[in-house]
Length: 86
Image (tube, rainbow, N blue to C red; front, side, top):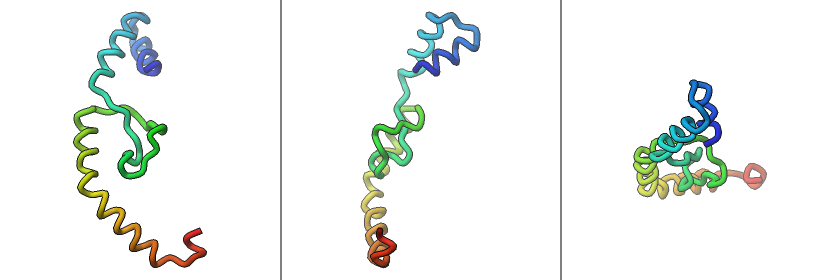
């Protein structure tokens, strides 16, 4: 959030105003992960902030797709040699 406060201060806001603007800005944001956590993304590696409604929508779509992704990974893994697996 400090980056956002700094950004607002660069736009001419005082520290207090920038802090207030940053708090308003962050209310509808969610931490973004690349890849999404349900697809194996590291929950500690936040790649940005995004609209929480969009992020929730994208996240919920993974639930119906991750099984197919897992199945394809297993299929490809079965074709790899031991050397390729290591």
